[in-house]
Length: 340
Image 1 (tube, one colour):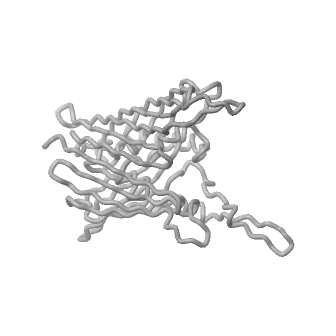
Image 2: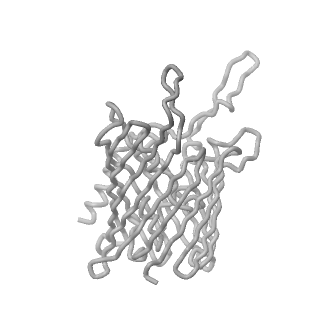
Image 3: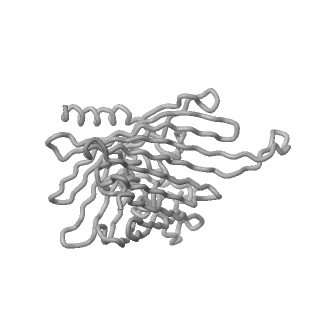
């Protein structure tokens, strides 16, 4: 049974490997950065196996007994008056051996001025989306592998149009305690729209991520390496600003190489003092840096940093992520230990 479960997981990833990345599916908010910790470490970390219930929103295989009675609340002041946030909670039950995880992710797009085809005002309108999830994970007997599933119900309202959908996240993580080594994979947003906005059913933003992390021996540091969007090969796009024109007027587009497609999947993060009451976090998102940087200017796109402080049963986190010269975002979060 354990062997069949692992095989089925990777067969599912292969079967869905034709999916595309950003802008080619609906409910894109499902893949937003969900906490200050994630933001500080580059945006997508799937290997944290500890107290933090927010990690269960992204990789359900990380749901574990250390999350018992932990409540996490996170808020993001995003771009152009867009706000979003997450809440998650885990509970240990059944003789304190099994954990159930619940979470919510929401986004509010703010208010907009509406006009008809003649330019006449139709008043203001808004938009928002929310996803409710329930997750569960278990250890594959006699192994260091853990598998987990999130079941999500999704509701979206954009002006007068509404849509409902459902999705699954399926994850696996290998936890080798002697080396404090974690290796993980997750397939996210496997699902469909139950009702479309109008008549056309759209794909969900399916994504496959791989990750590895480890704490260094005798050094208070944990490093993280994530490879995102493994479901499709071409994730690098040529930048029109990098086109070259020769003396005869011929335009040569930016050459996207094999190496570009490899490196733009990489997200690198480090946590200093990960086990203490105060820790620092740094991250670098290669694809974000390449796609959003301005030519011949130092904008520090792709960099992120943050910290957390534990005050008895309360842990407060803050992170700052740089997207470009014109855009950055702040992430705020608290983790409340209800056991104390």
